[in-house]
Length: 304
Image (cartoon, rainbow, N blue to C red):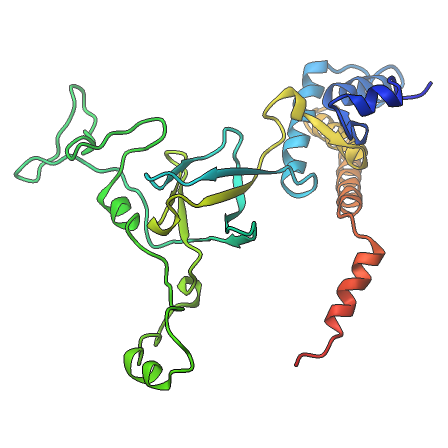
């Protein structure tokens, strides 16, 4: 019995393209219950709920390093210089600015600023409290407020939003007098990680917002980030190259939590889990010999 249940015409006229390379978590759980659970098998009895839990944990762990569930989110930076993180955001891989030609230019994080909680103080410097015992935020003292698109702002954050990127390209290198007189000593001690003109940002994980410097207002930026693959039911799918690794992750999770399973059996499935994970990672690395050869040709080229 074939696995394709639709005609080629229905496939090409439909909207679901490329889904044959994936297997749903529900199908993996059903197959696991048939193959690994039952009489004269290692697991004679196990609930589907337990299998589902370990299956979801397997997808979550493999999404970070093996499945690489990377997503991209494009948005224009508003005048507030603040952008909310996506709903399924776990960690970012890259943030870039897109120029007028569509070229992506990387932005770099800054570790020299933050957005601390602004505490409201009285005239004598003492703290102000609400009706309970919690500190009151200084938000609202200067007509600012926290909203769904703009978090509370501190003086530290407001100062950062006015910073412009280090633009050191507005002079002529051929003018010796200009270099030696006007810019003498200006680059001494310059930290290379801050010597760029693309712009900077920092992520405030406590409020779920990205803050940009003032140069990026109105610019198009792309946030490339990692998700855990569990956001929606449609996302809980696994590439067929990684299907066997999911089975081993589930099996190891089940046997390692039971007291009546011998330790050598637990260690066996632990080794199989790591082996299948490595195999899946190699398969999904998608290395093509022609592309690899092209890279090697570039390496052997002499530097002029």
